[in-house]
Image (cartoon, rainbow, N blue to C red; front, side):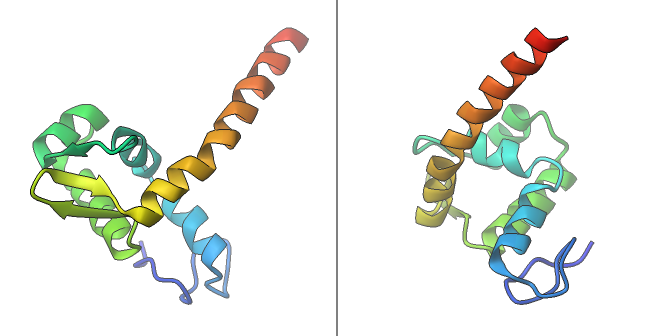
Length: 111
């Protein structure tokens, strides 16, 4: 899979527009789970993230590298944590989560 970089083509796009790079990154296995586990100011070590994400170390390491390159996750004394951009993204995703919950309820009622 290609490296993610704003301005470089991403899945579904030849332009590398920021939204397309972001959607490509978030669509990769385990990326959203990583952001979820680091929400609310959490910082976790690599081992704790492997357990929390129920992932294997190789896959997790790949996602961490990609999300660090995009400045959404960083590493410090307490472990991995969301950057300012990562926290803003998590906040931005909250309304989409609420919408999806309502959508799922409506679909379940239509079945």
